[in-house]
Amino acid sequence: YADSDPYRWISWMELMEPLVRTTSVHVAAGNHEIECDAVNYDIFVQYEHYFRNPNRIGPAKTEPVDNDYRQTLWNQSCSAPSNFQGIYNFGNSFYSYHHGLVHIVVLNSYSDCRRGSVQYEWLESELRDRFNRSHTPWLLVAFHSPLYTTFFGHIDEIEAVRMREHMEPLFVEYGVNLVVCGHDHAYMRTFPMANSRIDPRGPVHLTLGAGGNREGHPFSYRNPFFK
Image (tube, rainbow, N blue to C red; front, top):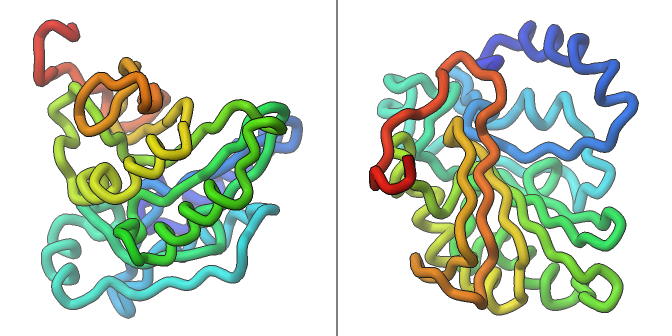
């Protein structure tokens, strides 16, 4: 995590260069990339600067953290607030691409996703107009904050609640097969889910957040059955 230290971005890029030069990589914005600054409260500045997604829809458009968020978030380290939604559209925020037989859609948990928002309208048009199951039979969606979790670390945070309410119906309507998330530093796989229930019309959800990090893995569960 850089957490507002730009030199960590540089050292991370140097460390990762041998790998990312030889394999396909896509990025999805997480809470540790929000990094709002103490002067203008601009968000995602370093994330937008260091990556250049080839499928960019257009130039990035962001808005600073508004007054309702500022003091609370700064007191809680505005570098990486977990419970957050701002406005960051286009650029590296959300986009799509094809890889083999898969149509991959990358969304931003931390940019407004409610009906009528830019991200929502883009996703609806992407699935309606540009997804063709006869060409790409698999539809995968990736974003940071999982809609479903059995861990106590990130339950019902605003970005997951809003995405579940507003975007999950699109996942069901257009037959998303798989949703891949992180955020919880653990592994979890669900049955096909919709409306907080097992539903064959919904996608399977994977949480793949067990990679190296300074926070450690979660060990507390909402239901001991899942231990």
